[in-house]
Image (cartoon, rainbow, N blue to C red; front, side):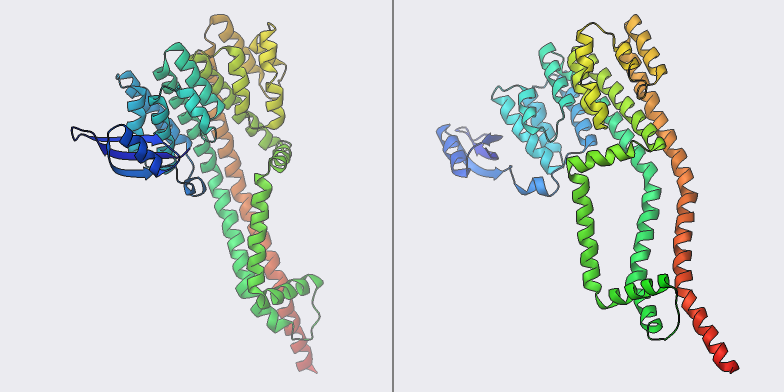
Length: 405
């Protein structure tokens, strides 16, 4: 049901600004009139185009939301008031819509975890589980503090990964851009000259020149083909089955596999630590933590961890059976944490350690990629130059021969 914000005045003339869910504007007006309120304005907050354009909520925005909500709850504000204030301060339209809905539902008496579960596209199972645990234990403010730290750590890790991949992405994009410009503007001009001459050329040169001539006469078709290819690539990576296949292929590359394992270990350790700190039982925490793993095969294996724990096995023994992903040093450290009763702290330290390892690994790979990419660019440019210059040398040779005669 759509969500509306309204301004109205009561009998004493006091202005009231709140949200309400109704089928349409007329229903909103009827409800307010039945409460003896004079309607001033009614605004639809459930705009359908928000989901299509700018309808995403970033990890950083969720972390800020959790941080301030935890602070407000500790200061004595009611949940409804705190969420309403944050909704007004948020600059993200999607987040405004969600927070307005939460404020309305919680004011009606519905629990926060149930209300958040209606927005599973924004709030993942870890988020929902921790909020539910906080409600049940009466420590909702602490749950939001833990969530804020966990989300900010995830955000920082993703930013480090993106930052490390920025240089290769820029070089590859520039290489593709220069290639397209040469194919569209340079190659057709050269092709139109060389193809008119009756000279012998290597088959590779003929192929490139014929392609350039084709592009020169069909520029619109060339760009349409490029666009369709880009769409196909986007669809390929958005389909779950093909995405899974791509992940499996990446996981077979030794260096990439090591980095993916370290990212998964860090995410698993931090999520599990955060859930345990919030008072979530270890069996449920393991179930939820398994969803944070990016590799499908590993996620499937992790789903059985909680069942093993419920049968009496220790977490260190379970992880020790998967040494290809969870290193021995991690297993031994967790075993120590189990013995000393400091498992949550140990898991947090392990998460910090493996996140720093991911950063160092990415820096090493990036430093190795720089000369490799430059070499690849040089080879491609050199090959293009040789294939295009070869007919020029052939023309010069034919001219010298004819002049000598």
